[in-house]
Length: 46
Picture 1 (tube, one colour):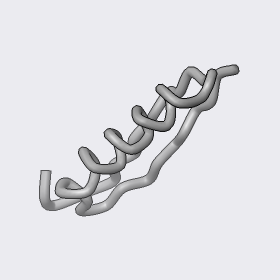
Picture 2 (cartoon, one colour; picture 1 turned 135 degrees about the vertical axis):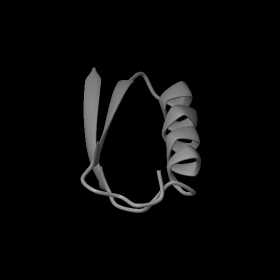
Picture 3 (tube, helix red, strand yellow; picture 1 turned 90 degrees about the vertical axis):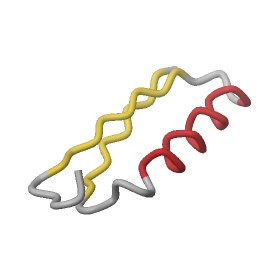
Picture 4 (tube, helix red, strand yellow; picture 1 turned 45 degrees about the horizontal axis):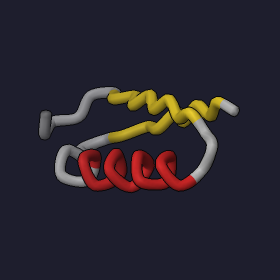
């Protein structure tokens, strides 16, 4: 099963790596293939 996560972000430079790692750890435990799409619209931090 494939899951696509569309994640809107705004000034979340510090939290994206934590979120990404958590999702990848979940993916290892379950029989899912996870696609993560980050949508950034005008952040000032990256």
